[in-house]
Length: 158
Image (cartoon, rainbow, N blue to C red; front, side, top):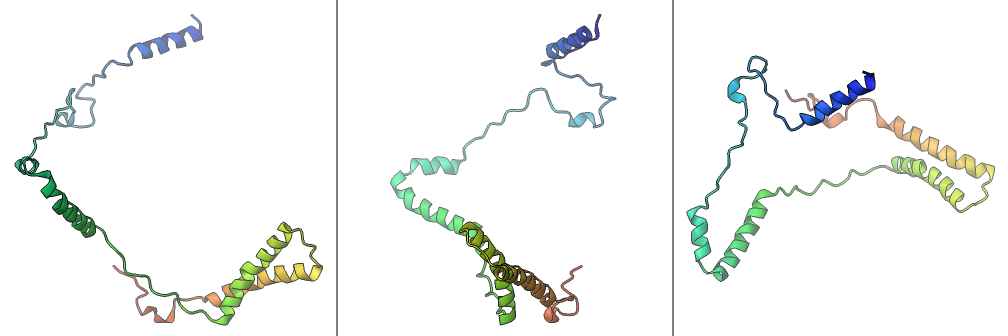
């Protein structure tokens, strides 16, 4: 026999035993026998409660409004509505100029490239210098430590 025919025979055996159930010896199982699943899953029968039967016997026109009000209350009860966020902190003029330079320089270069403007050397230098200067200004003003109003514990909770 050739290696190809051996492989074909193995595949035929795999396909033939596809729907067979695997039988395990209880000694080889890594779990106790009580945790084995039965071959057929148990069927569940759900009975309707007496309250549902009573509601169905009543007039449906009477139940529409209270049911709607009750479902609205349930919807409102289960949802959390966060408080409005605090206002953004005020920034000084230096920080605003640094942000403007950081985004304004590349925006000017992009706009000039998109509109096919002819840039002189000093315009190109100013746009690149504004970007670099804005970045450096923001990094330098960032600070090394925690804010002064953070307290003695830095917010650590054990």
